[in-house]
Image (cartoon, rainbow, N blue to C red):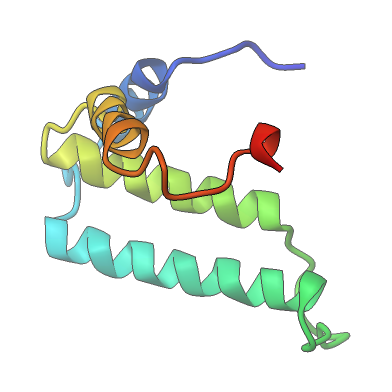
Length: 111
């Protein structure tokens, strides 16, 4: 089992990695395009494992976990390039779900 990392740790790790290259982060538009590409690859894997489209014998074996990891990396790059703290972004969205949307879904203990 690997060490537990906070979101801040992940953002710092990616920033250290990208910081070693002259090119630095791609532009926001390029990063959104990369995220779209990675989302397509994730969708393809999900379709192979859980959908109706089996993988061709000639296709490289990848996993949903691997594709999620690629998505996470690009998402962190995008956030870092715009100086967005993903912990703060997460906290904001959870506050929204726990206030505005608090009665939207049927709770398990209400059934």
